[in-house]
Length: 457
Image: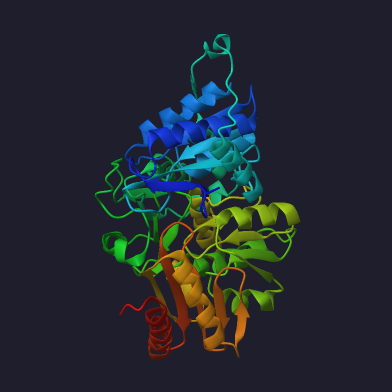
């Protein structure tokens, strides 16, 4: 039996790999999994083919006797929050998150608002591949999917309730929001405005071709946004991915800051905001070791996990002892709100933090040590990528290693991570070093190993 689910849902090139036929059968499998009479909330981002895939999934859910509620266009965290707080049995989100515009995807959410655990993904896949679908009699098919146009309203209200609205409003902040021409445009500007913040948007109109930039919020895609932050004198900029569960910040100097640096300063702030919360953070091995350097002296334990927000969320839920969870890609999880990545909530927390500290965001980031960061990728099959991982392990065998997802090598003056992508046929390479020369030397070593494994230069 093959696999459908990757690191975060089912994804593929729309109408080639992710087809209406696949979506229909997957909808039937999901409906069979949740059971007849279950209440399932469905939503989507702005991606091409989203309506088509959503319609096919809804058809499959109805065939299995599920009660379907259509939340239409909404960020992933908005739909997750509505599922959790409005007594739904689950949800389905049509999104490919940060992937290039030709991709779309299907994500399954449990009643607690978190993506279903890995073992439940396997159950859905077993139903799909065995075609063990529940089909209800025709008399149970007289009801259509019901419109549910409340998702974004419920979510915005929920976010605002978690921060000090009066404090933020008193500061008269001006910010730039870049929602990547997708559904973050429906919620993040609203959140900011209801907190008394003046909002300027870049790439703010909805467009499934993502004309402003690619949906992955990385520095090479955010030049225009960064320049806008500086030119209008904004206190910060924030950029979302395609479904707005990530938030990458740009400080007042126009510097794009990776998510692990943002999470470090937010975690430090949350210790003050919530002294009653446990002092433990959960993060993926892709995060910088800066978090240990800064947070451990504060008595905060760092727990390293494999890459994938589902695993972080489920581990936090199971252990019930998290201050927060996060990824370097801008995904931040705030337990008092919900245990999933949430770009809108992260924005609200950031506004509260700079209001409370009464300092420029650039000054707060400058509290952190500076490293030279390199993130790159090499196209190759997963099998080849795993061979590269083994060779890197051997080359750096005398260093501290974390091997739960690829291999992370840690030294006093550098760290590097080499792992197969969970969503694409790629080897992902991330590293930081105290000097540019050291970073380039490390990259050269890994690239040479990759060339030896693949036979390609």
